[in-house]
Length: 65
Image (tube, rainbow, N blue to C red):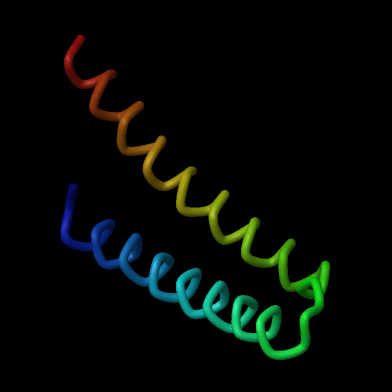
């Protein structure tokens, strides 16, 4: 994986980790469910990360043939 892609993946993971930590603290503190929009935002970030990883895998497979 190129250094640029690696940095992009690390950035996504840091952001997702921070968002999930904040949601977890809210759940514990207020005994509530997270805001639906917050959950959707984190889900979108996970999708973006998955697309980055899948793109790399598809490119790698294509280059083998």
